[in-house]
Image (cartoon, rainbow, N blue to C red; front, side, top):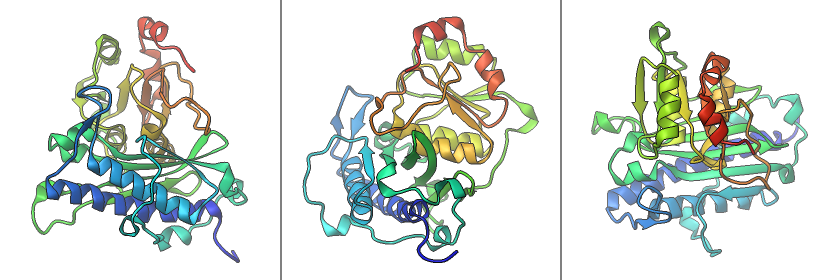
Length: 309
């Protein structure tokens, strides 16, 4: 391959280092102890200083290098100049060395939409449940998620001093997913992961209909997909319009790269064009294997209550 790497590779290579910078910011704010918590829509929908600074860092860093991309971030922040110490200009060399799939090699900047959740699992972050926290940068082309980066700022934090803190995983369709070891739930058990703080009757009814051997309640959509690819859960079921496109874009790519699937409760894929509504109105069913089996168990009451976009 001659010349500069394809735009998609360069964008993911930048997103990798930008996500690591955001992870540094998330840790720094926690270490300083002034979280700057704001309630956006009640006590279960919070924003902290870490959310604000991390989004500023991600959006400003990527738009400086790729001025024609569309970036959609979770936080509604005022337009203001971003301090230089929040800007990350690096790129991950290993990603630049990959061969870009032919279908993405000619993609232009202006055709890409980047969905950013600067701190997924904010409520858990404020409660000290740090293993739930992720930074999510998803990249969509022609309405479909094609690349994603997930940073876990506090990975290994329970191991104490001396342990390497944090990790970053990434994936591109047709290239693969990297930064973790793929595992599946042992003994074909049905382990369902779902929300820990946004439950309701629909959510509970849908989870129970899966006839799970175990239910794992954790925070953060990114964290739930990690549960799937690392063998801690076999399905992520959330029958409620709670997640947004920035929650699912990057994790969906990682899941797709290893043969998994993410849809709404009607088995319909979400679209990630720049003009779509942000809410995932018809819930989420995500699996590593046997997606159709889990979908077939969704109760009719849930299907009636949650209509696809």
